[in-house]
Image 1 (cartoon, rainbow, N blue to C red):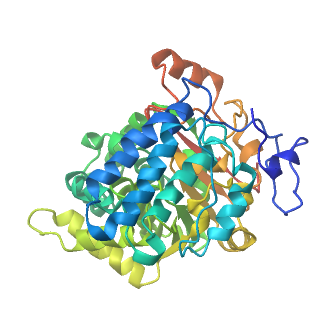
Image 2 (image 1 turned 135 degrees about the vertical axis):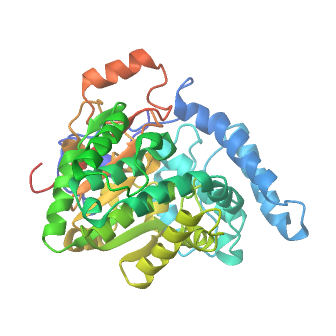
Amino acid sequence: MMAAPSTAEKAEEGEGETEEGFVLPRAPLPEIIVSNVPGSWAYDTMSRRLRENILMRIYDDNDMNKPEMASAKEALDALVEELKTAGDSKLRPISEDGGPEVAEWNKVMGPFLGMSWLDTPWLYSEFYAYRRVVEAFSFFKTGVDPFMDQKMLGVTSALKSMEALAKRLLATETDVLGSATGIKLYATAALWGNRMDLSIWPVEKDGATSAGRGDVFSQVLESSSENLLADDADRVAEALVACRERGGERIDIVVDNAGFELFCDLCLADCLATGGAASRVVIQLKGHPTFVSDAMAKDMMAMIDLLADLDSSEYPSAKAVGERWKKLIADGKWELREDFFWAQPRPLWEMPARIRKDLRDESSMVFVKGDANYRRLIGDRRWPTDTPFSDVAGYFPTRLCALRTLKAELGCGMEKEGTERAARSHDDWMVNGRYGCIQLFDPATD
């Protein structure tokens, strides 16, 4: 196996700082995942799935025969050819394509340039592939997002699901949104998305007693927790209720995918802002297209605008939340921030000093959403799955909640009893998206 980036070379003894000033996890770093092991998810992704499923869809969704697409097609063809021989083709620097982060990208990739796609750590080669797509389409000069059609399809195809969840959001009283139960409900919705069973969640304000509503909400949460392999939801809610009791504090959400997943994230953001836990919700977004569906600010605004413009006779609740979310932005209750760091393969312990300082000094909790962000959170390394989450995430500068459904062969903070049960039920339990984690690191107590 190849050596990890420079931070790993300085981490044999566990927690500490590197020469660059990065704070490392408390536990010694295990080996990083590479893609050269046949039969692994990483191998299949880099040797087949990325080329056959992801890149071929780009050809289908973009009219590559237009004269103005000639250079993009040539560059995309070259990338496809490289991935056909991923075990032999070598990584090259990102070209000067107008991106303000090219020098930074090439510094990050420096240790791996000249290595094959499969021998390079998976986290780095996969993110690099998407940056090559950005380069191919000259995104920074043309503004062409090759994944835009797929992201908008993710919105329009989910309108019925959005209407169903929006109806429940609008029916949830403000005091419930600010309660531990409400926070857990919307954190759970953000975790599971379409996998959450909304059929047992009450819709109308029908005069039911608080106790009656509480019983149903408890049933929703119990149903949604069956496949959780780590569940710190009570601690998360307790911390956020304390934020509300102090008058509301800044909360951040590092979002992942556009479409219905982003819609669920924004329902959580609404719960935090409307319920009073958050004085402001900062929504952290990618600085350029990546991983097909990852959300940029333009994707978030396109979805909100689409919702607000819906026909009220067909989608009354989705339209109402779109209008409500526009007001939250206009009133400064929500802030959208893009950063190139969120679209890079560096582990989160290598976050730039400006981001680290901002989160440490200003944010009371950061939600990190999705599997790709989680891979960066734990460095895409082979931690024993029962390694305490705090031993891995202990470098994080403020309170952290990870919401993740498992879609990669790695993890931590999961008790053996749960993982063994999952393995007995499903051979592919680590990648099939059926299992999830709600994990909290609190610097004050962990």
